[in-house]
Length: 424
Image 1 (tube, one colour):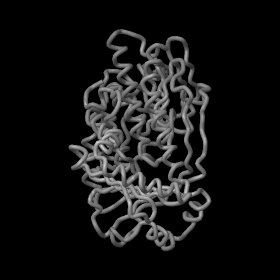
Image 2 (image 1 turned 30 degrees about the vertical axis):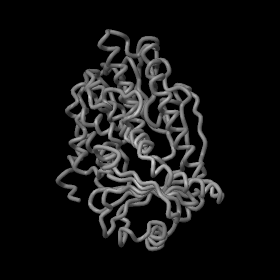
Image 3 (image 1 turned 90 degrees about the horizontal axis):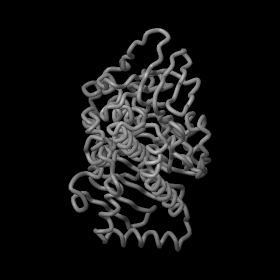
Image 4 (image 1 turned 180 degrees about the vertical axis):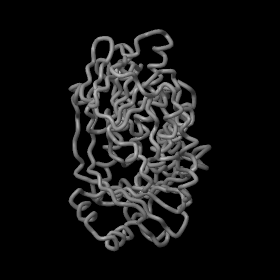
């Protein structure tokens, strides 16, 4: 892959200067400038709303050139949203389309195969390195006239009054807005500051994430293998590379992470197989403990939560970022419609509409990923046979497969305009 030809400069977005002592005014304060927070900023700008984005991480760290092995699945509907937001052109050259999905269990000869030529008129989605997504967002920021991006910056206080929010940064700057959006991840400070209860539990599993280069082409096929210790996903990247998500019991994952490079590659090869030829690990290894969590409310007075701050799920279906983009699309559409009608975008009535719109979809996906993981984690022989037979049966029912595919592509349900490829 030729990185130099496609990556933008490491120069962070330029901040606008403010007269000393004058508060920064914006329609919306976005807390967290990562993938979901950055996409939210772009969506707010397209909707004609101004935003102040505050992120703790230095831009130079977020834009580091080295490949860290982490990648995200981008569903078809999410691609349509990114195109409307002016982000897709910076992502497309490094996005690997997914043409086929193959689901199997252990060494079983039975499997479930999704072929886009049979089930859809386009690829199911694509795999993109997270660094490509971060760079596309950073490259877009200077063109967003209504967005003020501040990083590294740390919030000291966030006061949510009856009519507006007032934030104070560690460097003394102040921000006033009509609404705050919490996009600050699983450990969200914003959620904690609002005293929003959190439901969570650990799976006792960890995901080892890395990338490999291989001698043969992957032919744009994504593989999901269910092994006794957990799912083992092989996800296609550009240039004869694949991103791996290797789930194992946390103690086992720790032992695997402690192996030297040769021993790690040998263990990896045993599970990977030789269908893609010789393997080479081409990124650092990462290990993430897995848990499910969701905020019992995604709104509070003058506050809305999006992405992992609102919900975080098992990676078994690769839908984490897509659910965050769906949050953004729904919230910004609600805010844009309120603004066009001259209504207060931070009022309880407006936020309640966002809460209702996203509640069922988020809970459905949380339940689905949790249920799938529990189903395949049970290694009882009768249940294993039932799973294999069930996958083989579904493989023969094309209409049912089309339903599953539309869900995976993000095209099912009550879609916000952005996910339909329209401006909010």
